[in-house]
Length: 215
Ligand code: TZP
Ligand code: MG
Image (cartoon, rainbow, N blue to C red; front, top):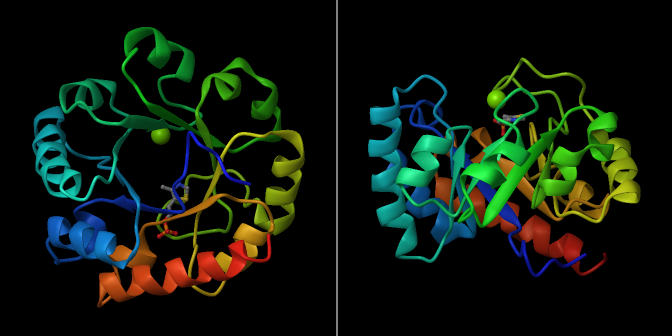
């Protein structure tokens, strides 16, 4: 499915920590050169000042490539940096509140962890949905259940919203994830922890393209 409002296919979720010693700005830039077309900054332990500082520096780099910046779960930072959008989970500030308090938000992402969420107002308000997690991952362990490919098919049959699959996504499973009905794959470690982030992104991108010709 193609969505005019969400044309992105390869989504990098970055944090300084996930980059394990590499400069996160360099990882972001290399990832873009490899085919990442949207980036979320996710810093769970930073103060607002630290988070904002990183967000400003990241935005400066990625805007040169016209890649949009999404801020994870921090409305204050998202607004201050004039991000493209924000991503929230099931236990964060809810999408309805965000719409009220940030009318300039261009992309509001909402993680789906329970099927019931698909029928609530929050999902209706969101611009895209995170399938979270598609597979069990060590990067985020406070999750509910892993959706798997059947979960993607199920969610796809219920909603027309753009779907972003996250959780242990790699070059091995990307094609299946897209063919099951996701529009986009999101990764942390497959790119941040890679020895060569540009090449890692390129390989993922190729898997996405392979799948889309069959979809
Ligand atoms: N939300 C659901 S799973 C996840 C997030 C932020 C982490 C994904 O990390 P990885 O390393 O790509 O499995
Ligand atoms: Mg959260």
